[in-house]
Image (tube, rainbow, N blue to C red):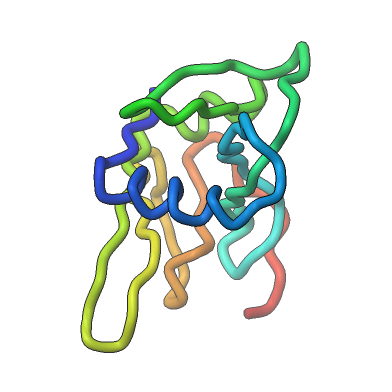
Amino acid sequence: MIIITETAVSQINEMMKEEESANLFLRVAVKGGGCSGLSYGMGFEQEKSDDDIEFEQHGLKVLVNKSDAPILNGVKIDFKQNMMGGGFTIDNPNAIATCGCGSSFRTATNEGTPEEC
């Protein structure tokens, strides 16, 4: 479903260490907004809901809402380090359009609700 590279998992694990709670999940989500209509979201959750799909990548427990799963199918999340710092990159084979900032997209079946960047 979603591929999270070892480099990204390592960075996420470092971020999790700063949280006060143990046994956290990484939630990967899609929400309406951004220049192209949809944007990505990632955050930590303590509990899984009935609407979630749970899977594991390199020992990291990940949650995706069932309604987001088709949009995120095949997504690759990586962490890139460069001279200006580092950040997560998301490669979505389902995206047919993205905006210049790279964090907003749309698919052939879901346009979302565009906002101004």
